[in-house]
Image (cartoon, rainbow, N blue to C red; front, side):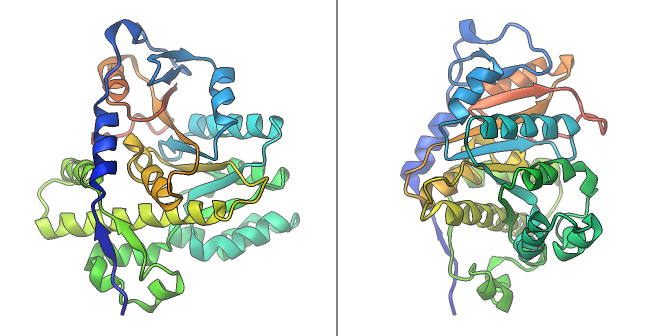
Amino acid sequence: MGRPILFASLALAGFLVAGRAETLPAENRAPTFTEWQILDTKAGHVVGFEDLMASLLTMDVIYIGEEHSHRSHIEAALRILQALVDGNRKPALGLEMLGWDGQAGLDHYLAAPDMAPDQFLQEAHWKENWGGAYTDYAPLIDFARSHHLPVLALNPPMPLVRRVAKEGLLRALKDPEMLRWQMRDEVLSDEPAYRGVMVSQLRACHGGLSEEAYQRMYEAALFRDEGMAKTISDYLSPRAPDAGPVVSYTGAGHIQYRLPVPSRVLQRLKGTIRQTTVYLTSYEPKRQDEIRTLLDQSIADYVWLTPVSAHGAPRRCL
């Protein structure tokens, strides 16, 4: 029986830690922040959307990190997708909200213009894998459908993720479904930098749990991030001449410091791809210091400030 291989890539971890710790010179930081600013964390200044797209048009993977169910973040993603199409690229949209067991239903919906959304949601196992309001994310799938773009269900099936969280990775891998989805023998990359960030955030968000509980939660996060990286890598390898870019749309936690999914895709494709990260975050005047921290720590290649969601500012565990 196959077992997961957990390994630590110390060279990569050191690179990522160094990248995360890089700070912006004080003279280059934006003096004030406003809604809809796009901040280049490497250059340390505000860039226009056209400048952002000049970079994104050259990429193989674009990671967009959102606050869930945030209309302004959906609008930002749609703007990027439209600009890619206008730039003669054929992006593939990857969505965290859909599991692999829903890919067939998703493909059916994309190919059948008369298929009702309710039937799609049933075939795509939306309720089992996400459960939130489909209307929040429908504009993204509608865009792909109307422009004949592929959509990738990024996540391993949620029942498997829950099993890892409940039983731990080694026991969960005995599930026959792991073999079906080709995850039983996958290499799960357990870099120290990734573990440090994830475990500290789990402790901050879920205080008072046992060490065993934190380990299981960490393993579930690792399993999901590796699974999403597998989906993106499999789509790009072998790469068709017109494939991509993949526009990966997930919660911002899956792209932070380029650790969770981006580093795994880079490893899987042996560093042969061009990728960038765009971190969407609600802006409030009282968050000036927090925004500066995100920039100083290089949370992503770009930080895009948006209005606050109708749901209010999210709880942050940084």
